[in-house]
Each structure stands twice: as C-alpha cells, then as structure tokens.
Length: 183
Image (cartoon, rainbow, N blue to C red; front, side, top):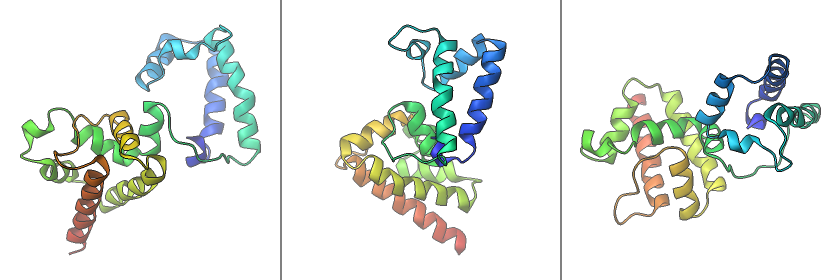
C-alpha cells in the first residue's frame, strides 16, 4: 500500500519508532484489529512479541524507502489492503451497498444515486480509476466477489448477472453520472 501513497512508508517508520519508544498500547491493537489485522496475526511464526514484530518490519520499510518506494504489483490479501487500495470504490461498496441497502432503496441504481448525493465529480472519477485497477487485481468473477466482500459490500450481484457484469453496470452508471454533472 505504501507504494501507492508516496511518503506513507516514511510515516509508518516514524509511527513504529514512536510506538517502540512508548511501548504498545491497547489503542494500537484495537486500531489494527479494526483495520482487519487481528492481534493473533501480529505474532510471527517464531512467536515473537508484537514489539519484536514491529522491529522486524523496520529494516524492510527502510529498504523500501531507500529503494524509491517501488514494489511489484500484487493482489491485495487482507480486507484492509482491498479497502486501502480501492478506497473510493470501497466507500461505495461498504457505505452504499451495505446489507440493508435494498430495504432503504428500490434498486441498486438508486443505491448509487443515493450514495453520490453531495459528492463531487472527482470522487466519482476516483471510483472509476479504482474499477479500472480492479480489473487487473481481480480478473475473474470469483476474485471480484472476494474483493467486493473484502470492501464490505453486503449484497451480491443482481440475479442473472455475474459480479463483473454488475461492476460493468456500476461503472456505466458512474460514467453517466459524470455526464449528467457536466450537463
């Protein structure tokens, strides 16, 4: 994720160094758990404590920064990675298409329209960029379904549509919204 957000790795290095100086506190573990990284995942296979785990991360992060913050593209693995990499789209998936959305709206298009009330065109363009990048990260329908679930989407594609057919429909709806705003 740091490769998509220049400067993030340096910020994380500073935060880890501060954390190590102060010692781990419950708020840190709660925030990590909320981000989809439960405390048990902080235990490396060698059984080190979390502070030792963070110390193991520092050389890798420092090297990453020294190497110009470049990495090979890889598909996200955790819920946090999916939501962070596709932040704008994850907002629509989790915030718009939550499990009760079809109780509140008559259909999926109305969910999109309702979610976009008050939003700016740039946010819609970010969602469109996310969809384009998602094609490479989740090319198969099964991959996309996992990605959508990881982004907290609470509903499935409409009956008779594959996940990618639904995403293509969402993309077209977003493009139409941009056209409407341009007038």
